[in-house]
Amino acid sequence: MPNPSPKSNNASGKLPVDLRNWLDTNHIEEIEAVIPDMTGAAKGKILPAQRYQEDVGLRLPESIFGQTVDGDYPNEWDVLDDQDGDMFLKPDPSTVRPVPFASDPTAVIIHDCYHFDGKPVEIAPRQVLRKILNLYKRQGWDPVVAPEIEFYLVKPNIDADYPLEPPVGRSGRPESGRQSFSIDAVNEFDPLFEDLYDYCQAQDIGIETLIHESGVTQMEINLLHGDAMELADQVFLFKRALRAVAMRHDIYATFMAAPMEGQPGSAMHMHQSIVDRKTRGNIFINANGSESKLFHWYIGGLQRYLPAAMSLIAPNVNSYRRLAPDEFGTPINIEWGYDNRTAGLRVPVSNSQATRIENRIAGADVNPYLALAASLACGYLGMKNQTKPKKPVTGSAYSEETTLPHTLREAVNELMECKELRHVLGDKFVRLYSSVKQHEYNIFLNVISAWEREHLLLNV
Image (cartoon, rainbow, N blue to C red; front, side, top):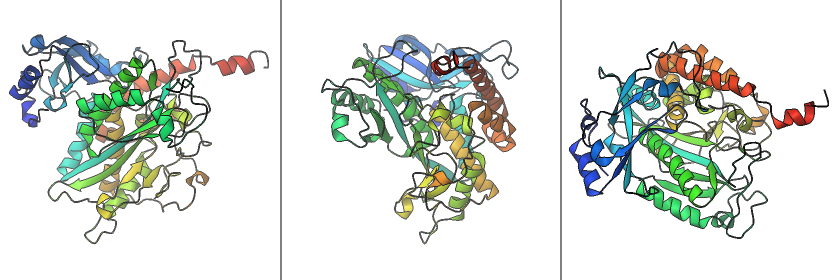
């Protein structure tokens, strides 16, 4: 894999030599030039590799970031240029990967978006994360993260009116009950996971562990810790690879936060620590191994600002079904505790150098760039403002007050009202994101559910 310096991402749009050589060496015939949109889906263009190397100057309309999850657009367009102008795409050479599930030799390259004056497009999710990472960089710090991604394997569903069902495994029978941490239940889908491991190895996605979670055919993949931007890229690529390999086995893989009635939701837990750029030491601990003030201020920032950042870590109307108070293991507030999975913020047992905070609130349906940006922004503001946390919970956090927004509309309103988050994330981004999510919520309210027809049609 090429690993050029950031300067290789030059303003002219010409490919750096190492990227060009990689494409030639691997006999790449086709290029997927992609960007992550607001939902975290891959948008972009597919073109022959030769054409891509001819410096075609790839462009996409800026309005792609104003698109809702159903392909619509919000009514408020004051945030964007009314002319719906183009953005210029620059490849990030460090992101080039083969596409192992493509029929012809294909590479995917994640791009960054720029205006034609050379300024970055501030509403692009990758740029939002980069803006937060630059705040840390100016302090001499580097965030280290490790995402844990939960998902469901389900039977193919082509009629949205029908509930999802578990797929049939190697035994010829669907899973009928919860099989938490069952090796045999995972082995039911060994052919799928063997292909997935091959795909992830080819795309340099660092899988640490695979487990069966508590839901029926619910699984979890843990990624190796590392740089926040690199891990966001890996989650972005992983979701696409998993969906592709699952469909090859006549199965769907879904990252919906709450896809199946009566089953636990799917999260993307985010382990976070901060290291000093010079010493590479963990700033969450003191020289004697005790917890630092920065550690506690970081937790304080998460407690203070996560409710306002909720629409970024619970971005869809379905996200709030996962956060119902009657599901064990799903947080309902921003309490924190040591090795306490009932709390939204957990400090795992570890040696002092590995001291970290696990944000357990985010759903698996997040855009990884925006979820990591939001969580890191909250921690940054806590350290900057020296925000003291509440005392850690020593028992069940479910007995504590529910302090998170209950709907996407509430979450959007809280984000819009938080001046500090709007400032660090970017006011233009926050206004556009909020209008997109408000539009999605309004469209959702127009849908009449089967529950309403069943219980209200003849009874009210």
